[in-house]
Structures are given as structure tokens and as C-alpha cells.
Length: 220
Image 1 (cartoon, rainbow, N blue to C red):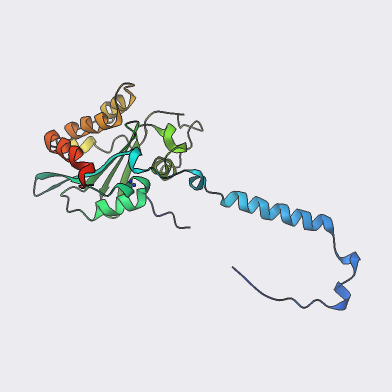
Image 2: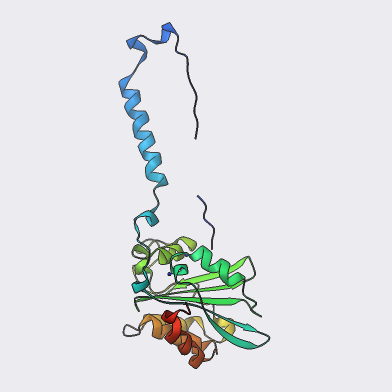
């Protein structure tokens, strides 16, 4: 299951060659090679690292869920598993929910890494991952890195650990400092981290756990 956002990514013709242009003197093999190199360089620039990353399979996906409040009532909703591979579509689905203050999406993979998304209207999207190391493993974590223009180990981005908008839950009662500390706990699995977040933003933990327990019984 899945990756703000919306990063979307020919010519024919015939040339008549005059007799004056058909002599060997007018063709420079060196120029041809340089042109080929230029085309190769353009191909390299168009290379997308996501093409090398395999989508998470059902066995890799712990859950994809949404949390929102409507008229003050907290709701935990299972979402389709394939959203675990597509940050754009996950955000789009969250935007369709009737949350009073937007909606939150949580994706857990292999109990190793969590991705969190919060949307408030069509233009306000916040994303984070509990471990940027997995940007080279899972497409949705790579999407988080691309969303924030991060590359693990380069510039101000760590090779591993939490990255993104760690203050996204501050208005809901979970501070940036506390969330970062949770993400840094070595023995805390990503599904357990999600439970901590649910508690921190004052959603019903028992309802959250019920949804997780039922997730692979046809609810997701």
C-alpha cells in the first residue's frame, strides 16, 4: 500500500540534403560524438531514482490510516494499502475527508519506518518520516525527501533519523521536540510510534488499535 506534491512528469521530420552537403569533408565524427555525449548527459539528468525503488508489497505494509475530527468527534479510518506507495494520492485522499482541522495520514512499513501526512485544505500539506534512511528503500519515503528537497547525508540532512515537518502536530498538542524524541527511540517500532502520536494528538487509542487489528481483515 501508499506517495506535496504532484510532480508530473516528441518530433519528427524529414530533411532534404543537397549534393553540396554530401561530401565527407562536411561531416565531423568528433562533433557527432560530442552530440551523443550531450544526449547521454540529458538522459542522466532525467533519471529518476524512484524508478529503481520497488513498491512496498502487502507483506511490507503494516497499515495506512487516516485520523480526523468531524463536529468534534474523532475518527480513525483505514485507507487502501496501495496508498503506502504514493504520497501524492495519499494527500489527495486525505483532502477529501471532512475534518474540522484537516486530516492526518499515517503509513507504517515493516514496523521500521513511519510516514505522517497532515493536510488542511488543498494547499497546506505537511509531511515527515521517522527515518530518512529509508528514502533509498521505499518510494513514499523518497517522496517525503523530494517534498522537502532533502538527500540523506547531504547538506543539512542526516543520513538517518527523523526528517520533514516535525512541528506538524504542535497545534494538536504534540510538540516538535517530543515528536523528534519519539522518532529517535531505537527500540520503538513504527507502529508503536504511530500509537504514541495518536495518544499525543488526543485520538482514541482503543479505536486506533481496533482499526489496526482489523486492517488486514478486509478493512484496509
